[in-house]
Image (cartoon, rainbow, N blue to C red):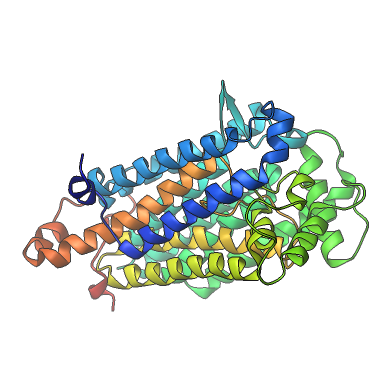
Length: 414
């Protein structure tokens, strides 16, 4: 396949593609640099093991994006949104029962040589499901009210289960759904109730932690409380001795200064268990300085800007909410990771999208990119072939006993 043949498959917003490629380069550089100590501990000193694994998963990720853009129309995601959400709910339950992870959190389901993180799949499934409900209810305020109730109950239930193992992932899903509901013109009465319920749940977890067993699967709840106390109340932590990871992150940022210590010259990554994942942004600043950190942040800002342009161009509700959800979950996750590394938030377990080392997270981040670029590709096709727009708008509608209409033209609501 020559370059011309390949280009016909690379569809969608070109600037977002450029951002993804630059983030890939940054990921490979920083993963190679920050996994040296890990390679000596777990890979027999093979320092190329983790970068090759990262390259493998990102290569699969590019294949997923290209396949989604070229072979899966966005309306198909609407058809399977309910099934995807039910499957995600079941996978989260299985993870709690059979999963494994640090302190037996149940965040990961072992699948032989591979592993599967249900919370990562839940991020994508939630976007599809919430987009469907909001899309189906835009014409009728009564349907929108009913859809809002379903969203609050469904998102609340799955976030409750995920929070048992990973509070930060539950908060990320909650925030994504909340922003999608704002875009979907949900009443502030429902939004207020949704927000209060979420904050109340976090407060209950915080207050109940001292009365729960410290061992087993309740360990993460104690970790959540310890990190809140350490960050906001300057309380000593019981989970770590000496310097904690956020302390090392601050040292890394201090060492980096303006221009950094140089590529591959990080020293702090040798002492941080999650230097290649949760705190990868601090290692980027250590090696490439404040300049490197600003460039990475600007890449995500460019991604957000281009996503907004795509959303503004959408003329149908389901692609609009699909693109909004995809952009939101990527940006929130990036902001959380960078804020944690910079010491602005308590420590969480959220990787930097498409940059941190990982398997499941890379694949589902690729799916999220694919959703956004699929919407962008369809918009480009309509602009290039205006005569075919009516055919697109008159495609067979999906029906549901409770939600009679699949999606409507946004122009009908403006």
